[in-house]
Image (cartoon, rainbow, N blue to C red):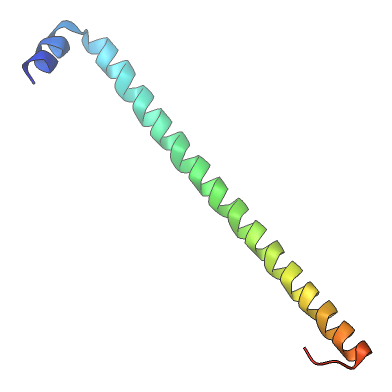
Length: 70
């Protein structure tokens, strides 16, 4: 802990400010990235559910055409 205090005493305030702003900027970009990823995942899940429904309709149509049960 003492080493950290000594290190912070040697670093200029400008460097600390730049590092802090950099961390805040990266945090903001991470939040935006996760939001976009969540939207993409929701669209992908919707497309997958539509595909499953279409395949179930095909399965029912084949069963009806062959006269066999599901």
